[in-house]
Length: 224
Image 1 (cartoon, one colour):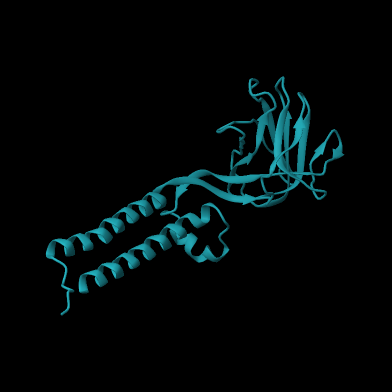
Image 2 (tube, helix red, strand yellow):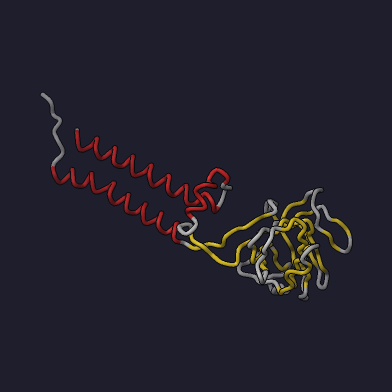
């Protein structure tokens, strides 16, 4: 004699309620990802951020030539920290190209610990392949810049080439959400890099997969 029986109506409602709640939670999370505004990356020199690589004494200037400065860039971001945490950094950032001359000469900003940014106003109209980014230490203490140690680096200090490359990122002056950029992101998904570009696709894939599995489980439980 079989002891199996169909689940009670109360249990069936509970089984169906679990995937519905889970789906709602995942859809809300996906909505947060899509509507969150983030800086729009326009370009990078593809130098990984491995750690501090060069110190810059007061009043000295360090330059990194041969940088790709992408169209629409409105600010540049590099990675800099004071050697002494009690001495806030003071820097002057200069960006120039052979064709345009000086496109920015502004004090560095520090939106987060270990980060330095400089505004380019007006934003870059054409992509340049020969941008030179210079940082002068205007403070009283030594600052340290980050990137990697490599014989292929182009950094110059006191007229000498260093075996160093500094991580450099270029951003648009405005911030946009993934939702507003969805039409441009989808055709380029095959070219997405690890990091920010994958956030939307990972969230969407997890949402769809979890919802499908939850519904399958619920149907099986309800038909036993």
